[in-house]
Image 1 (spheres, helix red, strand yellow):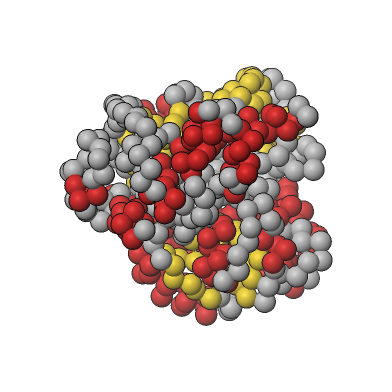
Image 2: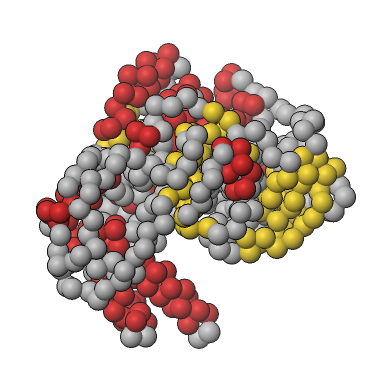
Length: 458
């Protein structure tokens, strides 16, 4: 077990290692040293991508139902204007990041491959804004909790750690007590440093966002989880928390993958084991990404809806890498042109472990986009499973991933249920460690989809 887990930890900690000693009857295990990833962008100054003239704004950037468009072709919209209204029990509002004309409402791709209704806006570069309602810290003394929920709801805030669950629903606790509110600052995917940049540059704003959440949830304790490799942030948080009178605990976390996963984070911080599919609130815990907390600050104090975010641009094929503030709806081709990226061999939205390869240059940045990686195209040779057991040892959910691939290949889908496929968090650690490069994640995702379809057809 130590060998496979140690290998993952070494690689994801950005350490240079010689993989030859990990060779397991496979000619495809590379022997060159791996280059560091996070240091490529971690200490760079936060920058902005110039605005694009055309924005593709999907009406589904969240878990749940597609928002209903509130604009028509030919309409003029102002910056921050609502263009998509919540629909159904689980949904989120969508707003325009710029002022300009609505030129089309079409079905368009989002990073997960789905095609959803999308509002296309031509930017007039005038930044004519909707009137925003700004508030002060003093307003927290008299504001009602339901009004805070309404502010979060109207701003279209969703989980920015890629979960994209509507925050106004998550925070509506229905009188359940919150013992621990955890702020997730554990950014464990290689290359990505957008959350680090956010914590470094907007510490005070995050702390004031915590004040809003504290008023709403009234947790017994508030904990921010920061990885050991980012321990330089601790002093800044401690000093500003004291200054802003925020009772904040800081938990240094082991820099391992997938420490940023909600279930692993809860267990590390509280010792509680939440089952896959169980609401953490049932055990008195709520977790939000640091980006979500910053978005709540923006909504409450600045009156701004969620229309932009920080993303990491990185990878072997990228020029001008770094962390950038980008408007939601900005297409990939604009970023490529702005940064002078000539080679686009492999483009990943998100991190290399759980991210998704995209092929459409018009693919837009959405609320859940944490990074865009430009990587070398790797020719992957697949071989049969050699029963080494590395995938089992690497799985944070204590599953046996090789079984899923076998059952999927043989069409034994019901056996995937007995093997607890629904508990898989699709972190990719199993496939990363596999010396035979068995397509484990593809088997798991496709298997889940087939089982879901089978359930619907019953």
